[in-house]
Image (tube, rainbow, N blue to C red):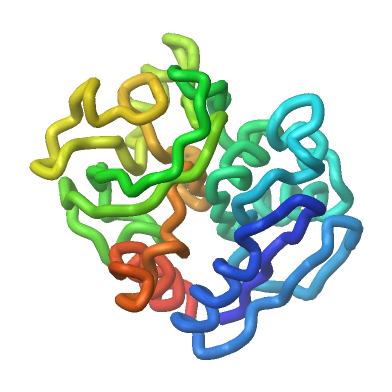
Length: 229
């Protein structure tokens, strides 16, 4: 399996993703600079967290028009899987590869802590190592993670099983108090229609080794390697 990590000015989780991918793949991913309009053929593309282009204009807005992202969009439309984490999720909504938008957190504050997530489906490239309804613990670190979509879009993504993760309590219950940022329906991650693109605000790469305090995120990367190798 070959993977690429897109690096923007302002990315700060690109090396974390590199380490997580290396750990699961047993090989180095390709680090692609945002100005690179072309890069080698790969089986997976990852957009890391951070503050691409300083979050000027709107989180992910400028990154969505970068030379590298034009290539990512083209490859995604041909079926190459794409994973966007935190700022990467914001970039995916800006490019239209995922529905909805990410707005300011409901409390208007930056939030950095572990949260519980309920896995809505284990039937995808990204979640095949998880069970339906499983509760996992993954860190968040964002200021603009409040997911929103209009009523018609919400109905469509629910009908098509595009919700990947929801914020929940330790028992897996989806409650208002378990929602850290005000996301509609406690949505923490969504797929595209074909489930070849996943965007999520939590950071699985930050909890992918017991030395980091847990390894609930490791299953995502291991599952991708298994599915794409």
